[in-house]
Length: 504
Ligand SMILES: [Zn+2]
Image 1 (cartoon, protein in one colour):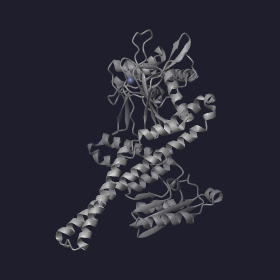
Image 2 (cartoon, protein in one colour):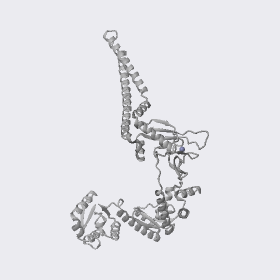
Image 3 (cartoon, rainbow, N blue to C red):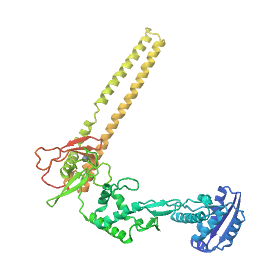
Image 4 (spheres, helix red, strand yellow):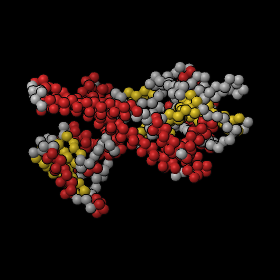
């Protein structure tokens, strides 16, 4: 293989960056050798700007290519060939058409935006040429191989993309839905969720045939592609518009307003978010409040109102008063902190070691039996009552095997016991941390309470519902507090306080 290397430094490179030709020469030659070049020709331009195409070194290189004296050209990056994109395209095209392979050292075309743009344009030009050829002759099939390298994967609801010719067209059926979405959002003010709901009730599926989710609606509203500007990395590519620029801008304003309104609301704090779940349907529960005579009453619910979720929660909808549950959990945690031995004790109790200890005892007994049996045989042998024949040998081996098995099991059990002791160590550590708060349990901030609870509690499971007001038969709401080290469950029935909202 015959390689040519092309190296160039401008005056600017030399003065400002101290670059020299020799660095490039070394790197390019090395790459050419790595590629298996038998001969290496060198073409160089020193102190000449890359904006000019008419450079002595470059001109000789192009000549060599035309005369078929080169198989591969090694260059540091496309900028060496030219500072101008149009010239880069011209030269790379020229070289490749001559069947010369072009090798760049510092050019990661798939990892940099420059690289992608370069090849995207190259691809587009190739595409354009291919189209022209196709118009002229039906033998255009060969050209297809030239294609590829367009780093574009266009996929948006409301549009069709043809990867064959890179054309983006409007899908009229979907575009009508997009128009509705924008109109509803701006004019009717039903919000992302309301729109998703409406589309799902009318049975219109998403592009992937799924249900609409508010997140998908939000993405559509915010996407400039619908006003005809497809954002690709850092630049916009024109596509056919589905909604007017004006409607799109109005929607953005509306989205901004909605966001401000939402964040301006006083957010209520829920002590158990993230660890509370509904034991009836398995959903995690989240905070939801109702306003009752001007007072906000915090509740937890397992209901998932957003469109497109798999488990919408209990039926009928389940809301439980947050305050009694928060209080019951916090009281339990305080109890543990004030009296850590109690938790340690219940942990110890929950860890039932009796089975292990009983088995260990049995094993010791068996081991003693083995030993006795062995001694008896040895005694008999010593006194001449037995002869060391085949049977006796077998008997001794079997005792030895049994003893080994018993000892192995004993080790396992002892390790298990040890592990359990370590668990209570971990628990004690957590308790020790929690203990540092013991003097100011009543003055802790909400966030501190939240953190302490999570130190000790892994989950709070709520089963049942609150009694409806005035109900004769009280229903029972039960909560189970699952501790972290290890997971032991403590059942509680939260009682209603007298409206003392100390958790808010
Ligand atoms: Zn539920």
